[in-house]
Image 1 (cartoon, rainbow, N blue to C red):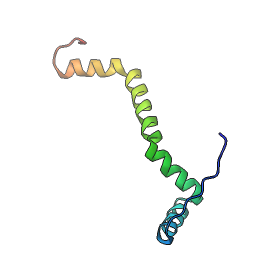
Image 2: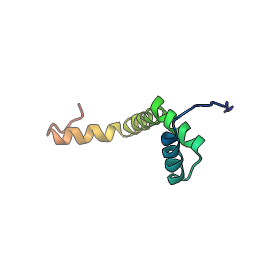
Image 3: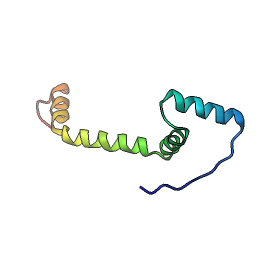
Length: 77
């Protein structure tokens, strides 16, 4: 993916916190900010939901069987 430069101005306290948090996570401030924006844009959540949907689809029959047994019907609805 091509990168573009984005310059932002923040107060010194915000810059200090960004540096501290990035250092604590072992990443650059640039990467830290990029990760925050991605999370805010929902990429992380969307990836999780897609993985969960794939998991549910893969094990759909198992869940259906468990549900039938739990409800005492003995059959898959």
